[in-house]
Image (cartoon, rainbow, N blue to C red; front, side, top):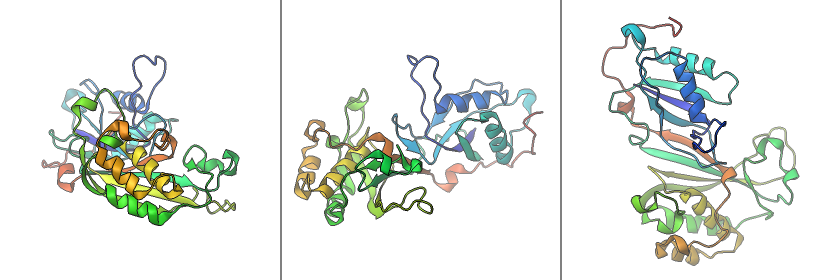
Length: 286
């Protein structure tokens, strides 16, 4: 079994969207070109909503070579997959041979998301092209960061986050109790900050947990920004959390998808170690 780390979010296109391919389909096609004898099925650690980005994601798959050839080494597998991905805006950065019981989703120890906010954006043309559709542009020229920090402290720890999850088909089956390890608000910058001279203030909101509910990060971001704008008080944020009811979440407060990035998925080092002695290096073309 192989585990890979990829740049860009992994999304499988629904069957009804015929003629379109998502990142998962492109990765599976790249694996098929290695001519495995087993069916190709990619299991990803984190699925991102439409419009959400990923700086890094991870997945695992089984790859059995014909004629009992030894497994590819990590370096050869990374090179071969990236060659097969060709012009797609997807890159495999690391590969590991992992134990048979490894699962990219269920063995993840934490997932870290970053939400980017830009201030003073009265019109989208004020943003550099490198940040267009990659941050939430607010008209506000400043936010009450102290209020945001105070509200963020309410979200850290183990809570019933029912108020912060959106309704979907999985709602009856998901435990709403989650432990959020980190919520921080820090100054950020434009992706082109070295060459962009308009004075726009960027902020980055970071969230870390083993797992999140559907749209939980976007809803947490929304209430923190609303607290910074003075639209919600810190006590109102607490009331929303304590309500433990998705219907208690204010209308039009959730942050839009395009400012959100999956930054990293972390594992125990021991889960990424294969106990057997590595096999000889093989060229994927043989």
